[in-house]
Amino acid sequence: MKVEQLTYAIGAELTGVNLADAVHDDGLFAEIRAALLKHRVLFLRDQNITRTEHVAFARRFGELEDHPVAGSDPDHPGLVRIYKNPDQPNDRYENAWHADATWREAPQFGAVLRCVECPPVGGDTMWANMVLAYEKLPEHVKATIAGLYARHSIEASFGAAMPIEKRHALKAQFPDAEHPVVRTHPETGEKVLFVSAFATHFTNYHTPERVRFGQDANPGAGDLLRYLVSQAYIPEYQVRWRWKPNSIAIWDNRSTQHYAVMDYPPCHRKMERAGIVGDKPY
Image 1 (cartoon, helix red, strand yellow):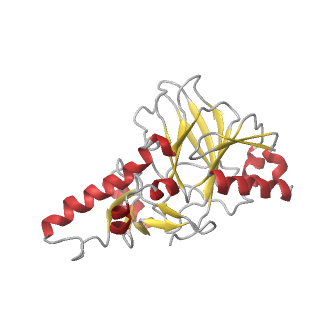
Image 2 (cartoon, rainbow, N blue to C red):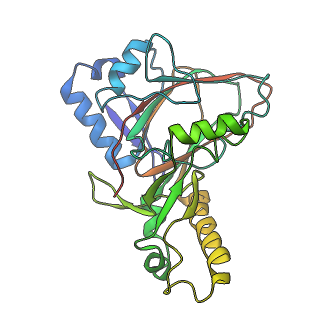
């Protein structure tokens, strides 16, 4: 297996490897996992694997989970089908910087995403290194956000376009989760900036150290959250991947965010993602 780093900040392409072999080869899987921790997102071409092999490889990292809004393959639980077509011009849930399922108490560990069908041009996906995003923050910002928590909501994202009764039912099933604004990576010990498109507000901002009067709370907290979310937009923290059929991306959801570029209507784009159950951030 060869590992070619793609940018200074994030991402590497693996060659000379078939992920189906890693299902049973412990040594090969250990190499892939080590590369994932180092590079945060891995890319492979020409992986003509079956859905069963896709799920089996992803399960080596941990148990898989379905998505309450996006449908899964009926024969392979945990394999979420992200199918876009010209009849869904307003289906734009992906084109925002986010880490997957932070609206859960335990957001995903990561995911294995395979391209089934893609447009001839467009439909790329981008990833950002949120460890680097934290490291590069000004020291006074790091001091301000130390100890802050934020709410993450499926109701305000996937549920926003639903009728009110359905939206409320979704929130009842998945109440807003509260996570530290700066989480600690459970394997590397790195500090990670952990707010994205799913974050709606800080829950413990309104303290005497930060707020002189009530008027300070709303613009102060809102401006700070927008500033933190915008750190993923910085090109120096990013890598961009152009899809081809049977290309695969494997990413660490704990230390990255990603953005699916929706610049391909009226073409089709079919992706299948195995999302891996994670742990509660701290």
